[in-house]
Length: 273
Image (cartoon, rainbow, N blue to C red):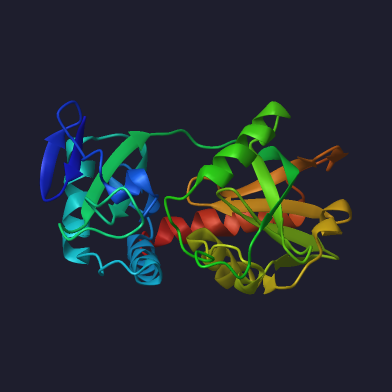
């Protein structure tokens, strides 16, 4: 396997990032995960736009998007696979052990790993921890993911693949790596970005392509929604057949099934929508 590290392709066995890299020591970094089908990335422009927004929100220099595109192309060409998880990581680079940044410049890593198509439906759990809709990192896709690691481990313990968070005021927010949609009386709703959720790329496309409404929703909407589904780069649109102990028989329901078909058709027609 080959990855891109700071300007060129390297073998994974020999690639090295400093143990003093700020992405490691204090989580001072951002990332994007991009779906790649037969060596072609999906929605790369949208992902790179968000990478830049996250960098600015964290106070990092704007990434060189031309280099990032070259890196993505080189890594995908060097590692052919039918379905890949392309990971772009951009950090504050070599720095002191404290929170202050160093002066040696940023670190860019692009890598890819194989993945498989997700099942059409899955189980989720809610967790007692909250998203802070007013935090300094709200809406940024940073490498500070330990909270998600803990929540996802809780989900796995309970036979689920995702954990859903409310925010500090008891509103439905998001999953550890997904956005959540609910169907109420035939209409699709998803929490607004103001809830503290990440502005997901797949989320935005589903809103555009299905007419879903951004709605401030209480967390307990999950107890009464007719259908629930998740969206993410690697899930695309995935139905939910169980929330905690509540079964949603017949998932994917008719509205979710239509959203799945629309997304598959539209994304197949345009690799960079």
